[in-house]
Image 1 (cartoon, rainbow, N blue to C red):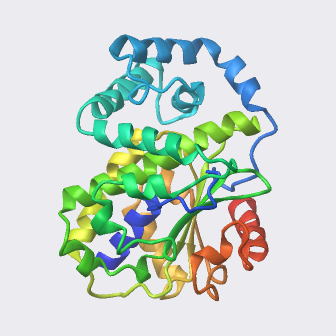
Image 2: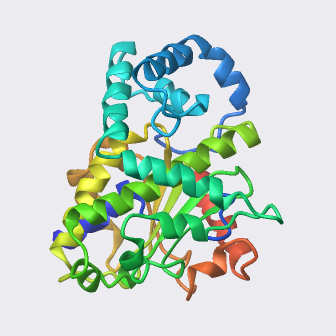
Length: 314
């Protein structure tokens, strides 16, 4: 049960360090034809109200982003029953961004700015990796061979790939605390959320993150309980902080048959999470290094075709 809970937390959080190639419900379908500009115009009043609420609280652009997509995600999230709940959620998240999460959001903003300041115009991922909390330790254990973010050409959505079975969680947690790991995971989520919002404006579509969890090599017993605890805490907080960001979650190459796993996930997970889950075998099963599916990788074409079919198919 412990390892299944670990897989669940990975599914709901989506651990990632954006790769150097990152340009950054029921049955799922491809994104609706409505353009981002159309959505922004339709919900202009609600967005303005949320933005005014945020700027009244703080003028810090890292805490209260100026990108209207940030506020549109609150408007479109159907877990909020009314405007009062949306405003309450925004205020709660801004409280975190001003206090406990301030170093995370400030570092993420500065790192993304640095990553875009290149002579050739390509995204330089090193400033982002180096600015992560406790990067000098964690980057030795979580690398782009195990964890990347790339894009899906058909929709421009981000694809978040993670191989939990390739992470030495015991070795990692012997060097850092649970709180330090939580901060690292939330920094990764903040970076990807910022990239998704920026790319949404550029592509005129509301982008989401499709998560690919390759479970090959995940052990059914053992592992670090501290690592599981950090995943659980970060997953819960990330779900609060980033509304309307996650697309479908693909659980790939599970170490046991998917039938029992599906039943257990349905018991352990809220409906909003289980609706996004899809268990499949095949994609990434023959990939040795995740950089193979990044932009320019020799396995990319096949991979993005498979993800597109699974993420938006029946």
